[in-house]
Amino acid sequence: MQTIHDERVDLRTWVGVLGTMLGAFMATLDIQVTNASLRDITGGIAATQDEGSWISTSYLIGEIITIPLTAWLARVFSVRWYLLVNVALFLLFSCLCGLARSLDEMILFRACQGFTGGVMIPMALTVALSTLPKSKQPLGLAMFGITATLGPAIGPSVGGWLTDSYGWQWDFYVNLVPGALMLSAIIFAIKRAPMQLHLLRDGDWLGIICMAVGLGSLIAMLEEGQRDDWFGSPFIQTCALTAAIFVPAFVLIELHRDKPFVNLRLVGSRNLGIASAANFIQGFALYGSVYLLPPSTSGFPVCTPFDEAIRSARVSLLREPGICCELLAQHLDVTRLCRRSIRVLECDPRTGPTIYYCAALRFSDISVATEGRWRRFCRF
Image 1 (cartoon, helix red, strand yellow):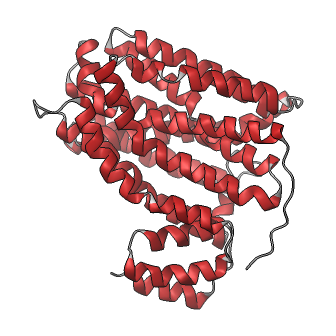
Image 2 (spheres, rainbow, N blue to C red):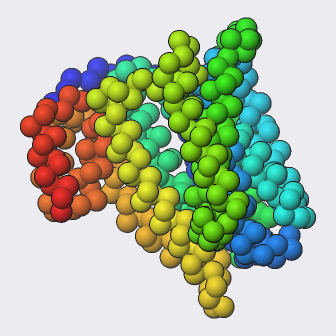
């Protein structure tokens, strides 16, 4: 059992941590909140079901581009001002999405909403790790894990209920009250820091351009490929070729540049590499099932948006034992936890990998023998 020293955390710190966690919850909720309501939204803006898929795709493209930029831009503009401006813009674009009257407007506003909302996901983790004492940081990681898991799980349910009760516009207006609370928390709790605008002059602009073009094209290809007959579509072919050129170029630039805006060399660390790989695999289950179920049931004439959402929520919440494991991970010896997770896998194939993933996040030392046993059990 590890010895954990109790360190007092003042109210201001907790307000800042909880406020940014609320922002991360809003951003992850908005990934899925429209999925159960696409039929109503496309009807309101006079678009087809296939065209409506861009409502989700544009948000994901904006979010996936801004997340890697967040750490560098937070240093440039300071955490306080970077959060304040992006949260305010996120609320503005949420309102504009609710007021959109055409597909072009909706796609533009959703992309901007994703670009500003994506900031809140990594910044929640940054604030938790930079303001909480070391003994409380596992609690911050567990809180972040809950927001990242719960948001996509209940997103379609919330969106379906709002659409049935008040109209699809409230899928976007629902952000206003939590956003106002987050703005208040940032103003109250996040300390002022000087901006470092000189960093813009020495920015890794070539790497940023390659990242934005490459990842944006990759997401567009993966999201729209099935609807456009994959490589039978000239648009998908163009996206695939663009991603194949710019993503490797981005990786090479970041690996060879002295001051990259994303330090990809850190992935070579064993602990971070294991945690990243586990998180990548978890993402398939976390976002895949939640995204695919609502569109697959939306064609049933007796299926309301809320019915579609409930089906998704039932599947998504089957993964929630992992939340308990994240909370337990802060108190247990994480090296033992890794070994125990191998045994748990035989009883519950969902819980074992989650414990192992949480232990990896705690940067535990995993022996070669343990890793070998883990690989053997993963064959089941």
